[in-house]
Image (cartoon, rainbow, N blue to C red; front, top):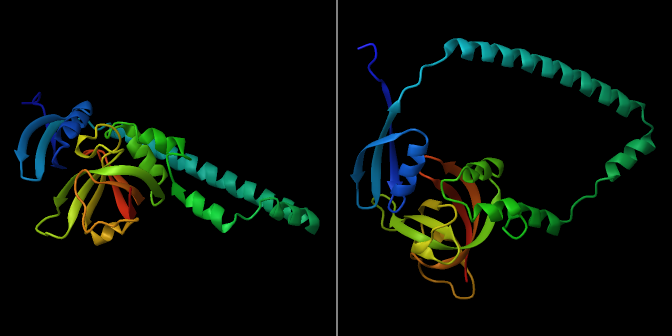
Length: 241
């Protein structure tokens, strides 16, 4: 009994069409699929993997080192700030004025342009749109740019009712024009949104939207769910193209 393997368990809910990606991602992390419950729109995947022993002594020692390091950094930072403030006080007014005017104030147009990330002006975002939906680049981008606004040309990969509602939906979006046949790029998700929430714009505004429709999506960056390989966004505007 002492050698009996102990497991930890995890259940992951997926949307239709993403089961294979999720299973592959979980298996790379050492998880074993033990059960799969297939629903109409969603599936529940049950995984397990052997528990790892907890190195409590190592954890305690590391924590103590981190606390000590934090104290040392705090003291050094305080001393550095004190020296910088003294230097500023010793400078004549003309020098301080020159320093403050060295950085020009951005215009309103420049500020607006800096707020929206596009693949044309951001190499990181351009690379992300060509990466696998489970690639670590998704998590890196979501962490670095949470709350920022992105814009890209894409299409609706999948559209399904959210829960028991017939006016609210979950959308899976992909870069490019291939709709349900999209094979590259993140699996962007709008969760629990109505057609009104999409804020449709353009020369010919449709009454609704469906899988395969192509738009220019402007959205706010949310979190990346590594277990489901889903990159969550909040819609800002959706322009027909």
